[in-house]
Image 1 (spheres, one colour):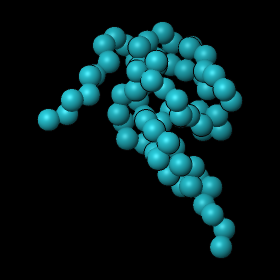
Image 2 (image 1 turned 60 degrees about the vertical axis):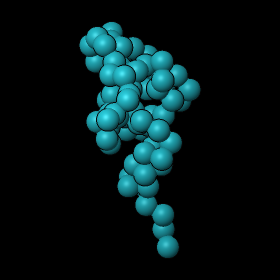
Image 3 (image 1 turned 30 degrees about the vertical axis):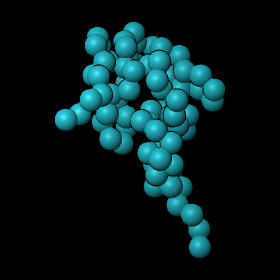
Image 4 (image 1 turned 30 degrees about the horizontal axis):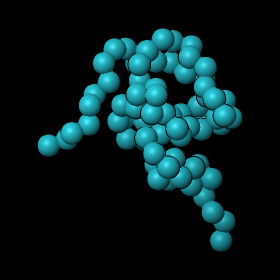
Amino acid sequence: MDKRILPQGPEAGLRYGHSEFDIVKPGTFVRCAVTGVPIPLEDLRYWSVELQEPYADAVVATRRHLEVHPLKK
């Protein structure tokens, strides 16, 4: 059974900056751009300024970055 608490309230719209985000549509959470998992705004730590996407955690953020910017061999 999933023990995560789902956020209550509407989904927010954000503009992501380098060290902060601006709320452009009020809400209580955003969805991870990769997994679709809801992320309460108070728990949001990872996002891409370039892609304007939020991520659930560092692993997901790194995976997405490598999809967009693959390592050259």
